[in-house]
Image 1 (tube, rainbow, N blue to C red):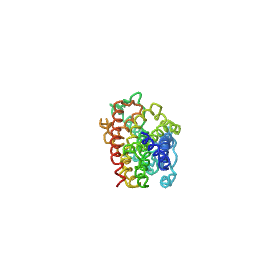
Image 2 (image 1 turned 180 degrees about the vertical axis):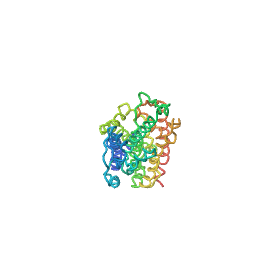
Image 3 (image 1 turned 60 degrees about the vertical axis):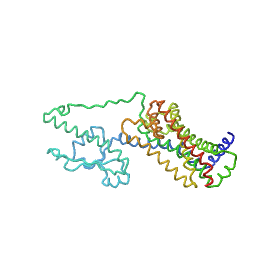
Image 4 (image 1 turned 90 degrees about the vertical axis):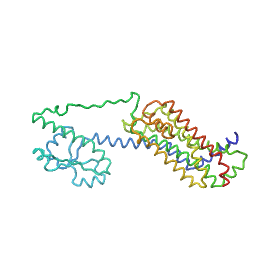
Length: 387
């Protein structure tokens, strides 16, 4: 037991000396979530600013007196677009779409013919693209009002064309919170866990083998199992530390949110943090065992890095699996590592209670995964040095 503890302490000291491990752990855990939420809040604020803008840029609005009157009645201001609106939209100087009215607009409407309106914007100009939806909604309301007025002038009751009214009824649970903007956060937390322990796992196996420091360690009177548990324990400590830092970085991250809607949606309390830790700590230990097992067979640092990066690529693919199964998620999701944790973290962010059975299944899978990987490492630890 003393030998195992000594190996654990030695590996933790080595991990703390490794700048790559520290940088990835600190950046991924402390800065990742705040930056993500800050970006979300900025983008959402840009969308809302376009929604709240009461200005329409137009070319040829003098050819549509009825449309001009309607826009002004809705509380909007009409500004004439610059002559070089195309170039300014492409250079991002213009942050709004431009309404283009043809010269024969009123004449075609008076003759009962179909008239066209165009909205011009550069697709790479994000602010202008954000302004597309409110402008289209305004024009659709104008078209609807014009149709109703034409029907009334011909003595036709508009209600005859709309005998059925469709309404939405939301069946959202009272305790459920909206977390639509923060659906990317669980995947980011999972990536931080994997990346945080990856370099420590590589350094303690392939790194020591490349430096030639693994052979002297084997000369000590310790078994392969003791070496395995000591090295895995150090990597697991790093991974779990990343989990704790990441989860608790959610609290100061809320101060960076500048958007009221996102602040209302993202309410992360102590109960949520406990739920995250309950879900993620066993996964961090299991991922540490897997990374040590993957890196053990590699003869050099670069080879181990490539193999572990392939494991890392598994995270985004698994996280997007629910898209393939719209509707109710299959029961086997809770038996798949990473997918089960992603599912439960989304439940926590929505304000739902975690199922004790789902948590127990996820923990059991992580334990089996950890034991299997450690058994493999313990069996190969001494043999791999002799190769």
